[in-house]
Length: 382
Image (cartoon, rainbow, N blue to C red; front, side):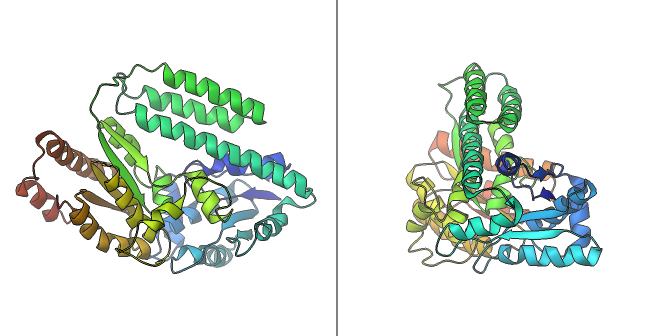
């Protein structure tokens, strides 16, 4: 058995750690690329979400590398993510690709439900070994999140642009290569020392933007067109509404671990949205409220084209923006999105926030009109 899985940001690091710790042969798909999108879009329904198309591209490329088993998360509620695995399995069968699909559905009552499903892959490994492997993968997920949190603070303040990204890429490899908790700790210590050595201007007055929206687009840099790195280069400190380890805890561990997650965001969603609408639609609104309360300069909502929960949230954000005085911009991506166009829009939004911050005045109507003429979803009621 050769097991593969779809990419979602740095999730491959913790999944690979879990499986290799159990002696399972792992095939990590190539990082998402134009070829991945082309392959996935070619074999997927036209109006399917972009994440599904990327998933399909991942699986096809992994199959070419010898993978025969897919580990895929399931989902519940109105979001189409709950149907991904079934649709993808049908498409692979139609293509004649013989791949077994193991679906890890979110547990309804107890974490043991997840472990039983996982047993289809872990085979003869004992429960103790399985739990130990999951814990090791979890520690890697937390390490990656801690690394990204520091990176977000350094990027807009570094005196040598790009140096933090070099350290970050090296650190990801060190974390990925760590074979036990001791090596993982050493990798993190080395990474933090190198990040601390980067010259920064701590007196620089940076703009702070919160990133909210659909989890896959938030976590996968290739899909969101490196929005966090682009903003960092523009002098923006970003904060994501949810990180990988938090999503794992919420989605697969039933929120059992005492840590920040989507629960807090959901508490702040009313009165704007009072019930679950699928995906992270409710959390998008609650997180926007939290960022406004924390005096962030703006919010960017990221979503794949046709994402129903985020479309619901997008329709509500203008009201939140007006009530709480936080400018918001919606970035919608599909397989046709390009770096240049997105960068131009980010530059314009950041410029508007910078002028507001310096002057403490309302944005010029001409600047707002320039966004509207381009057909960009934007809420800038200040």
